[in-house]
Length: 239
Image 1 (cartoon, one colour):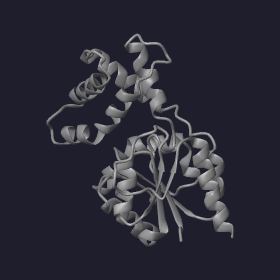
Image 2 (cartoon, one colour):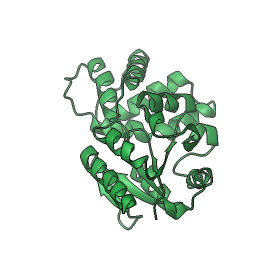
Image 3 (cartoon, rainbow, N blue to C red):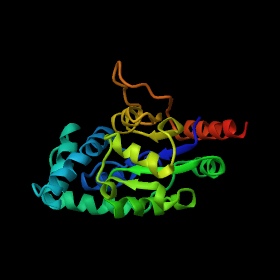
Image 4 (cartoon, one colour):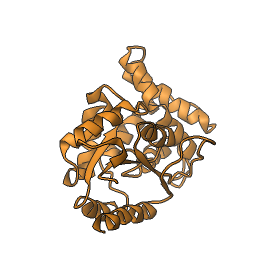
């Protein structure tokens, strides 16, 4: 029986591609409607590895900004950019992240979930940076600070199942009593399932699932389907 619902943050609670495209398209002189989906996915996939390079002292933050962006651009056959443009993108992207909003329908669903379930967040990234997003999204209305875990503060990062086990102890629940909701199959679904949790895949980027791998307990393809799924959980709790 599910007693807690725990969320990923980036591209699960809000549309992360929108500020990415808004920051990058003008610098590349592309139209606002340009499809930068592949570049965005590559940029996200490189996140953990890029920060490991910085933490190990191999790259400076400036080098990371340049290398990460140019790798993303190459994946979409877009020419590399200069350090100046990469840093301008980073500045514009960070500014865009200060204006993010919850996906449509989530606030209503969270209002109702809060009455029946413990709520939490597990997210990779710097604590201050991720908490700023949480506050911008007003998630503090539904999630207590001690139920928000970042990879920096715990010393553990998805897809390591141990970060989910740590949340079990924090919520004082068994693994089978918690469900995780995230957009990334490998970092969210597979990792949560390995930890013994249930996992709901918010696959709004229409990603393919590896054959013969861990199967999500539920899969939804857009914010309104996610809202319906969360409201269905609430209905089950009322029975």
